[in-house]
Image (tube, rainbow, N blue to C red; front, side):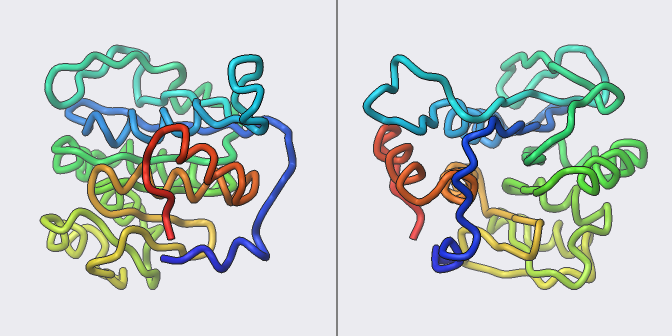
Length: 213
């Protein structure tokens, strides 16, 4: 996925953008922490990095207000549930082994569908695409996932057009990315989407991570 579309979608509005990242038991740590780090470390003025704050407000969302145990045992504390979640500019659904269970959680799938409809953009990382696929958000759309989970996505979203060997896909307000670290690359792209290519590239440079091209 290239960045040609930025010429028409760049947004340099400096107002704070709210990003909500879904968490659940057995979520992949980097699927959550990667995007969290990218958005929280973004600065509009790189020269004043240590004097200013991020233009993103990043919060963790869960079905319940209880601690979540990620893969490897890392404990995550949700800031909000679906019931008290603020309006989102970006809703991020990560992957992990927990998606195999949560894809059959009808309550969670329904809440994902409702919150996505209220959010400006929705993005998945890794097997998170199977959750938004089960919610019907990928019907007729191009989508991707971890290379070992194409069949899982096909089962969860039989009407999706699965794209292999790509880092991420864009279909209107729906973004999907491949496995694990690809969520960082998608997040850098989204920084550019909201605040311009220069800010996206400077964020990547600070994180010492390749900028997506």
